[in-house]
Image (cartoon, rainbow, N blue to C red; front, side):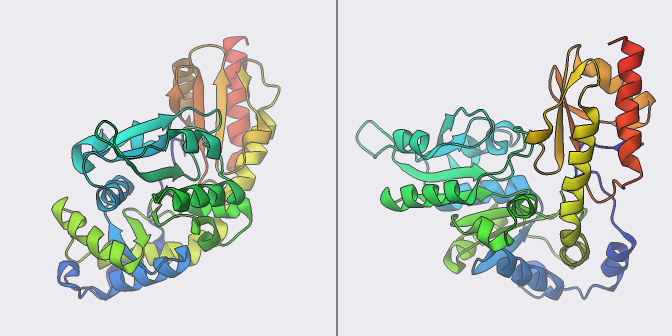
Length: 342
């Protein structure tokens, strides 16, 4: 099975399994797991922040960030299709106790004008805006990328209105590769950033939350409160270290394979693909008949995909999708098209 459901489906590499076996372990809650400390230091440097903490998941990292930046009742501005809104179980209201203001966009990129018009000042009647969140790359928008200049305009707005910025950078390494810049540059506009190790980077478990030393010290309390303080977490952190060494340099290859598939699917009857919008590791396939029918038929041809909408399939590329699989993916969709008589 060629599994394109997500870049979360990868299995640990042999090097990761070996690193897990050899990792020097300690109790991370007590601060003496050296592999975790090493990972946190490397990720702080990678993102250009003062410090970072290792957390079990990206969702936990995002929710810790909201709870650390905000007080209950504050307003947080987010894009309407963002992961924090759609896929984190209502966490902002339950955990941080914040009010969310969502902005509709076509491609996942909020305009500075939209944000400016949505910022509120606390009064007897109105919650004050304390945080702006943006997602890079944007999942539901098909892996779209927020340009550096736009992110810098977010920074200017935040400084003007005394707001903080959190970057949901689950796939920030993909964004940086697409932008042709260091990861730190892609994170520069944000006060805090969450980066997944278990998506494009291929580690089995874990994410990083990075920011200032003061922010991370406060975030540690929220991590403990949410049950994210782990013990011998070095067995997981070791995989993250291997991912940074071995998988990070391969990220552009995922993008290149996704673009080849997007171009190869153009013109196949019954589906519509926009190759120009395939800028990272996701290909969005729009179907003329229910996408669930395509999904079932594709599995019979050895390809697995997810459905973000009733007439849309998402193909996500990762380091365990090889060059030899690219024509097989194209052939599978062409075969299904023929079966449907499209």
